[in-house]
Amino acid sequence: MMIIRYFLPLLYIALVSLLVNVNANDEYHEELVLKPLATGHLYAHFQFTTNWNVDISDKDAFKHYNLFPKPLGQIISRYDVEELHFALTQGLWRPDWWGYPLISSPPGAELSAWFSANTSQSIDSAWSGLTNALSGLFCASLNFIDSTTTVSPAWSFRPEGASSEKNLNSSRLRYATLTRETICTENLTPWKKLLPCDAKAGLSALFNSLALFNVYYHSMGVHVRPFCKTKDCKHPAVELRQTLSLVFDPILLSGSRDWNLVTLFSKGIPSVCPMATSSKIYVDVSNNMTYGEFTLNPQPHSLTPIKYAKSEFYAVYDLNIIDFYQTDASYGFNLAMEWKKTKTYGRGFKPPLYTHRYATGIGDENGGIRTRIYNHDDNDINILYMEVVPWYFRLYLHTFKILCNKNTTRNVLLNRRYIPGRDRSRPYLMELVLRLPAKSSTTITIDFQRVFLKWTEHPPDAHHGFYISSAVITAILANDANTTAPPLISTKHNHDKEAITRIYTEALLVTLPTPDFSMPFIVICLTSTVVAIAFGSIHNLTTRQYQLKKVEDIKKQNILT
Image 1 (tube, rainbow, N blue to C red):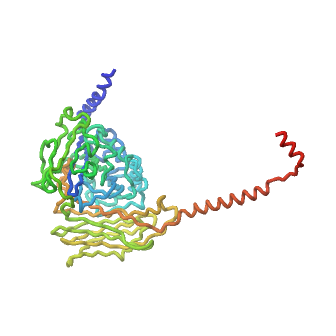
Image 2 (cartoon, one colour):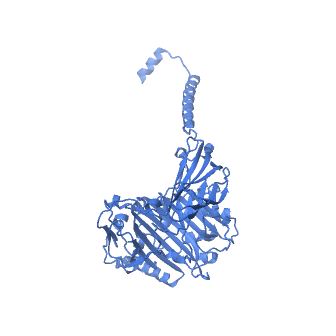
Image 3 (cartoon, one colour):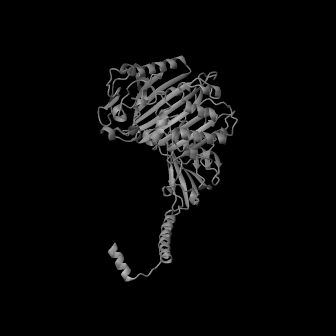
């Protein structure tokens, strides 16, 4: 009996692997990018890619599943979703310190979806159903997304995959954010259950909840898009990317910049995922001499040049050729980086484009938003700037100004799209097309007025304040300095598409006029006390009965008792 119990898991893995090989419609890839940063931090980016050779508009194809997760596939098919991007983020990525990440996300929850052009249902009803379904799937508060938080940007977002419509119509796009959303293990658990190997083998075996959330920056996402396997798009397919980005501080974990997988994740990699076509770890060794010399243990299997760079390389570890039986049984495969000498920490090379945003104003009536955008490149940069403001911050368009510290005859503002908000119906949306002069700083300012909300419209922690979500800056940068280049599988499906850099500003926390919610409680307590005292005294006086008794009877009663 003990022998049967021992061989049952092995038999199960063998059968699953056989089924995967029989059905070649799916491919699953695992990748981990590790990059030491100039500030002493470590950037870790997991990406799990599932490619399914079906047409995303074919509903019959979404009735039979192999590696593609069935819960997510049913949602996509039910609501005619053509492209989906969902992210949950804790912390703020700072491009002026760490450069540009592989995937950018704002603090809180972000959700955007392109719906099929041939859908038979209303886009708004499909969006409402999608948010509620994803809310239940990922244990997030996406059900709070409604018309007051949803916009349809016309310029800032474009499909990342193959679109079914040649002339794009932004009315098929819905975008919303929830900055108040907090991230915890109840979001991580359903996310990792979508992986073919869950968290039992492969790179996902490193997922330790305590380690994943004890970081400076944490962002996990789900990205679904259609793509073409060839340029003529005769063979469509669907790509699912599950991403997890982390920024560790090895100095706090081990007291030095030295790190290994065990110190970061409290465990090593026990085995390779049997359903993964490829499973690789990439370590950025480009800055080996810049931030201090380091060594890797064990030695990498190969070196891969980084895209668009001849002198920068990734050290590659292929898990499929690692003999896990010779590794430490208690930890598994453990990759380590050791620094030969200490280096003064600081900021790295300044990226060509970064931003800073803050709120202005005094009191509870008027305020403003200020956004400074810095262009450190030697050439002008064209960007798209998008601002979404809740309806209870009434923007005044006549106060909109753009100031540039560099005198130029060219107009910085090239185009503008503004949709005013409506009370309790829709937020304010402003999209700008800007040309930033070289070596300049541009400031965007606009004022708002705070609205008096009904007492039922305040959240439970009303005195905490209300959030204005991060502004979005979109650009195509010719100078990719201080950028984490993607060696990942999904970049091979971008058939000559230009790499878009997206930057998110800080979210703003602004207070609104708030009533004294403690007053009703005080009134109830005071009223109840007065009523109790008055009612008790009056009730006692009106209901008590007085009877005369003789002294002899009282004495006899005391003797008997």
